[in-house]
Amino acid sequence: MNTTPTEKPLWDRSAADLAAGIRDKDFSATEVAQAFLGRIDEVNPSVNALVDLRPEEALAQAAQADRRTVAGEPLPPLHGVPVATKINTSLRGYASSHGVPAWADAIAPADAECLAGLRTAGANLMGRSNSPAFAVRWFTANDLYGTTLNPWDAGHTPGGSSGGAAAAVASGMVPIAQGNDIGGSIRFPAFCCGAVGLRPTVGLVSATEPGPDGSGEGFDAPLSFQTMAVHGPLGWTVDDVRLGLEAMMSADLTDPVGLPELPRLGEPGARPVRIAVVRDAGPTALHPTVSASLDDAAQRLAEAGYEVEEVELPLLGEAARLWSLLLYQELKTLPEVGLFGDDAVKTSLADSFTAAADIWGEQPTLETYIKGYARRGTLISRLQRYLGDDRLLLTPVCAEPPFEQDADLAGVERVRELLAAQWPMQAVPVLGFPAISVPTGVRGGLPSGVQLIGGRFRENLLLAAATEIEARTARVRPALSLDAAGNRAVPTGTRPGR
Image (cartoon, rainbow, N blue to C red; front, side, top):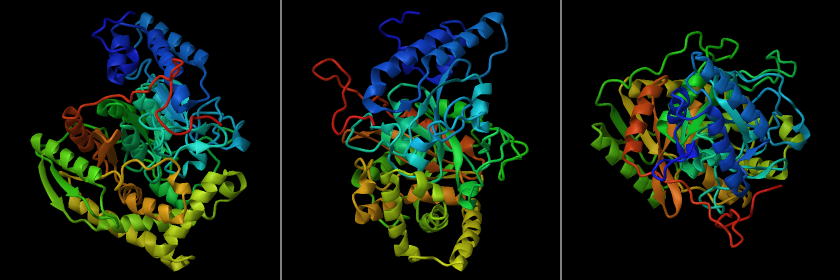
């Protein structure tokens, strides 16, 4: 299929447009796969977002999708749509490497439940997205696949741990990417790269992974992983994220927090929904560009008919402090990081533990840890009562713009600043509520954005409000420049690679 000069190329279209076009036979799934593989060839060498690429498999999946179209079979919602999956999530026949060289051959025998949902929905699972080793940094680099760069500015992080996913979406390599989030790993990369990223309510998307034999019996997940970690979608548009979430949702009682019957996303809800703007629940002042983004989003929501007011909500700051107790105490007990982690992840975690000791002491007691989980329940109840069925929170994503690349390796003082700035990322996992990161434009050459937080299983309200912000925001792709030889180049910083 040839496009006219006024048409968007296939790689720049939304997932919904692609699925509809394939369904209506405006173009084929093979043409879509070829367009995205061409885009990957063009820009991935500059940012190193996608790894373990197998073009022949992507084309084979597309050919199978085209056979179903020609046969007149019922077509699923993501029929032929390219979707990237993260290197720490099991995809049948691919390594679940976690970015660790020692696990480069740890081939998954079956799909994780969330990826099985995407496959059933018809997605063309194309490319694995890069992440830091063990997915525990807000930066994306590892000794197996190298460094992922921010497609806007290589001197700044693309976010982590789903930095490869966000960079791939923002630069047009896929319209949707799967990620996961225990401390901002979906929302922060979306913010850094100018994409949309949704962290769903805990339990809405299954976290079940197959064991080494495919049985589902494997890693004994720590309590913080069970109660805070979620899988969710990143996309270029809010509608892409909605489609990704609907595909990933699955009833799964083998998941310790899984649901027997999943609530559907449903209608947006009655209007006007109330918006509570929370600006300063954390320990550090907002950077002026972050504060301006918050003002812009509040104004756009008010224009859309929402009731907007500024509030004080210190429980978010308290939840963020709990995050550094509950998660870090458990990370200290996991031997894998010490045995297999790269120098960067070891340094980052060591300085993070030191920074957390400012709050909880060098060695918090078992009583402190138990009381922390008890307090968590109280904060969840308080926030749910406050939100009710008709209120959302509007917060920063981070108190700073996207961090400079490898800022967590600059010493413990800088790490203290990073942890303080990330209070909006830390509070949400502790509480288990859904949240979405939404772009609000570009400031100083870097993406800007805000976070919306909703009540449990109120993803429909989040998506509706995010759509209103998106509708009033000019969206542009990052311009990956050409060097003098005509090769794709990045504006600053170190080129990606091992």
